[in-house]
Length: 189
Image (cartoon, rainbow, N blue to C red):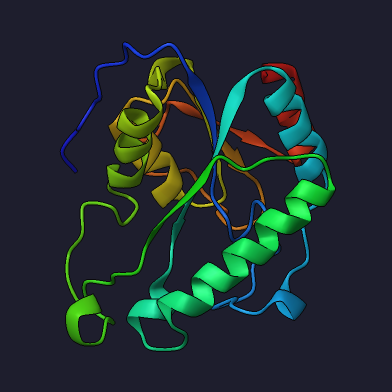
């Protein structure tokens, strides 16, 4: 995979979070509020990051849109519901970036290669521009090797793989560390 390292000159730093498996328990093609079960420690982690002046940015592939299982409006409605749940916990999410495309399983216009779909770094690079981020001082927590690859390609300084999904090592990824729970990320903020 080509490296697209962003020059990191911005004053801000971000805590990037994958959604499914990091913010909420992994449920294939989650798209309704009643399906959401928040991962233990997510609100405490986000409150601590917010207190340390990190931008809170969600980056998520949404192949369910590409496959026609739910719509972009369904995704946005769930995102608004999740943002309200975070607000009730004293957390303001700065933005959610998503990729609705899939190169093989997409339907119609959603079937295509996309620079935003992880393991590509597009969503992270958009956030870097939008929020004037120093990616080398930022953190990305994901639960899949594709998250680690996207973060590495974007030049994110700290990559954390939440244990549970990936059993082996991520190919070419020596620049990440595994964490057993979200609480293990707190000392890094």
